[in-house]
Length: 215
Image 1: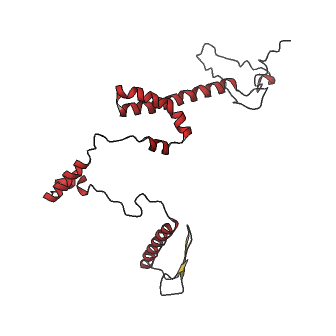
Image 2: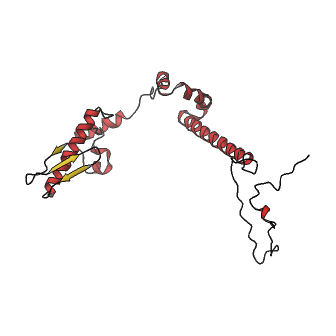
Image 3: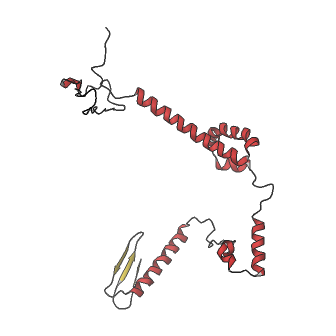
């Protein structure tokens, strides 16, 4: 896309997806502002053509609470009409005793069969706890119970894998554990401490020296 940015020369600007190239010797701040406006309009047009997702259907969102949702605004003074609007808005925040409603069809539409299968055990636990704890607390209990169980299972798996899948002289894979040498300073009863590794074969043995072959 090419358009002139001023009337003083044969300049042009090129707009790609993420780059803008301006070729002009006499571009001033006013023309740069106009250029910025053109870019915004072009991006808006491109988004409209490409069908950009919108939660409001392309309508500019607004808050129905009005400016009196702020306590500072209310302290400045309100007319009778504004008080009536505020009263009605507060009244509208009170839900019906039947709300919120649980719709089984909505649950099936938002959770596929696999997710419903592994959520079923904790869902049944939440139903058992709901009469005693309430709906909200039962939901929190169910959420953290699942997370704690996953955390404990992960710790057990990591411990088992690290313990029984070390890398030694018999295999190349697994965790390789390197232990640093112990430091013994003056004042320690064991000082001077001499390392038990006295020959070259003791280093990097990867458990070969501790292996016992019973024939």
